[in-house]
Length: 109
Image (cartoon, rainbow, N blue to C red; front, side, top):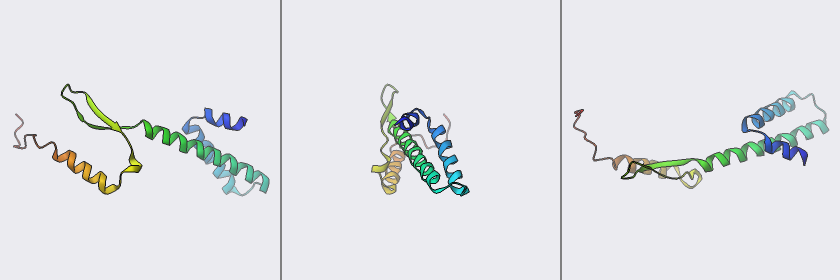
């Protein structure tokens, strides 16, 4: 239980560094069976911590979808797993074609 509380206080970077150390120790092959299992369990905990930190960061990301009449940004939550690559492509194409009121004459003024 104490290790779990320690892992909760780790930053993503610290957990990733710890995970890299665990992998290195396991790849080295110098640990006994019980030490390897303990090291592996520690690595699984660190990996879970990293995954949770990344998911938390992804939930905080918002997509800029436009600008309202007052010039304020219009955003929507980022939900990458819900969108296929084809849907993303269509959305980009739609956003680009929505800017048709842009002067395309080539003149600066």
